[in-house]
Length: 165
Image 1 (cartoon, rainbow, N blue to C red):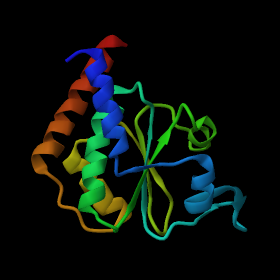
Image 2 (image 1 turned 180 degrees about the vertical axis):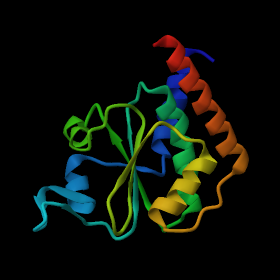
Image 3 (image 1 turned 135 degrees about the vertical axis):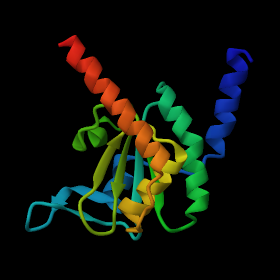
């Protein structure tokens, strides 16, 4: 496939995307109004259902990998949650308000309680577990194999860090 074909496919894909790209204005009217806080100095959630926000950039490879997964989840969760995308190049102020430092960064906003930030592009199954746990308050059965693999990876990384010191 040449560059022209890839651009054409990306253009077609953008036209059929299910996850909504949002601007600061939309965000301020439907998620949090960044200019208004409650008596405790906290932002007040304005949504009607829990929200997952993907902070991304068009040049970011992991962001592009995450895009079709989010579209699938939008369909799978059919009305239980809202899923939005924020282009950090177009909405720098919005990304800055949440301290987004790496891409992609996911922001989980439950109906009640504080929002939770998660950097990176987790696999679909892990993302479903995060949605169920963080947004829908469901009890999540952890994948033992995945937990073991993550634990092993973290142990190896700690050994590498210790050697490099």
